[in-house]
Image 1 (tube, rainbow, N blue to C red):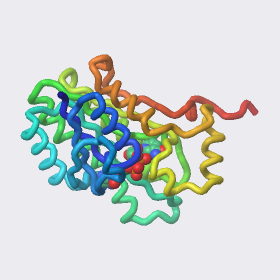
Image 2: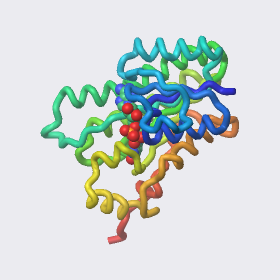
Image 3: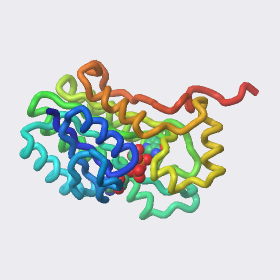
Length: 240
Ligand code: NAD
């Protein structure tokens, strides 16, 4: 039975991912600031952790390792966003986004990597975003953190291969509470119109990718980004 730690698994993509690994018989620990949105979901054990606080993260990872005797997969998924233009965004909001989305991944991966290098194997995964490779308006700070996660995956892979793999998944639009909180009906329809697949992804479609990347079958994949966006960033939507 593998030990799998996932941050931000109380909701959305993280919850679906926790369910996917639990269903396969893995032991899942969810590090989140909120309790699970659906307490009936088979999504592992919840521990209250703010990923921006490295001391909390370190103590949670060390506890999990001590309790289970191993640490196989860590998925740094917790993330937040605020919709604001570059002229209006506030320093406090921007700093919090960087602390959670970027330094939250770095801190969790570092703690996990120390355990994994000592045990001789492990897989580090994270949720980045297609926002990290294009200039999506009103999300400057968020976009920058997601580009940064790709750089973390590359660097961890360079330093820690072959014992530890590091890969990030970059979803396009996924129908989750984060997305629903920010969307009007018009924004939702406009986004779907820009996606060749014509719809948002379901969280389970991202979870399936994490499950594959954590498997033995993906053992030659490291230092990379897997984009899952229904074709959104594959090309232009018109030929004019
Ligand atoms: P969500 O809001 O449904 O879930 C995010 C979870 O992270 C929540 O349970 C929340 O409590 C937790 N969280 C937030 N701040 C935290 C912190 N400081 N410490 C610990 N936990 C914290 O959102 P989601 O859409 O499932 O997003 C998950 C990840 O996917 C995020 O990194 C997000 O940026 C990324 N993403 C989402 C989409 C999308 O369309 N929904 C697209 C691309 C990338």
